Length: 319
Image 1: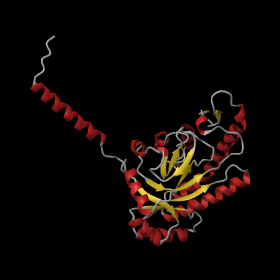
Image 2 (image 1 turned 180 degrees about the vertical axis):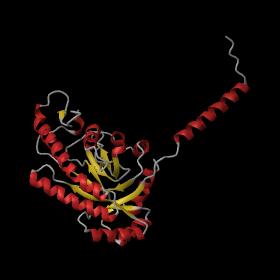
Image 3 (image 1 turned 90 degrees about the vertical axis):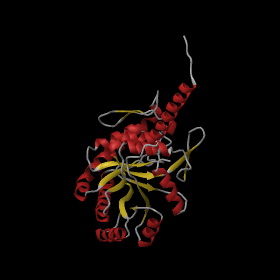
Image 4 (image 1 turned 180 degrees about the horizontal axis):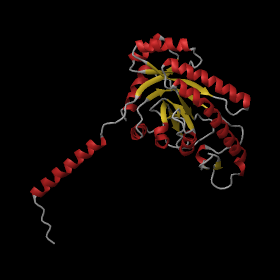
């Protein structure tokens, strides 16, 4: 076979290859379709919000869930006058797993937070239904969860013999049932106030894999119950981008946090954002894939306000 290759052929092939590389570069740098907003956690005050605004932040997640409607409305007016927004309220731990009295108390307190959020002009309240512990349970890297698609009850937590973890399985299933019941009681207040119940999973030994957490949130079957995902909390269980893709349209808010795994991938410590094991470009890509247009609220860290802002800008840009 004659395979004569002239200089003209070489130049043409080189030009075509160059065009292909240029096109690939443009494809890799395709613009992000979603818009994310910068926030931090705090108590609303004019001095704080002015400083955050100057550093490029757009809003706050208020920790004052007990604010009266009048107090919250005043804080909203002050924030809006500065071009800022109180976008959510951090309630935190509920107590929906401690019997009837605890359940009623947890529901009543969360109702207070929902009404405060309404007056703040916030659209969600962060809520952790309950937690369990005090019994043998698998290490983060040992979990191999199978669960019932109807009830959300666990069939196994590790491969092989699960007898060692039977008490954990029973406590987990009880917490699933009581949490679901408690959140259902809150849905009418959420609907009345126009504020979403944003369920967060915070090292409470429940729903430790993306599919079972997604199943629990979806099982409430309400537009007033969504997921608040903390990007750094569950790196030890699965990559953050996997959680985001699993939650999809159930995702309503994100906490921005990082976690540094040990070299063997087992255990680690929280750290400043972009100093840990979170794959931030992959996270940004996943947020874009699921169509998340929302708030990215920094939680924790010991950086300056300006440095936090710079690092969050890089994350929002997919870098």
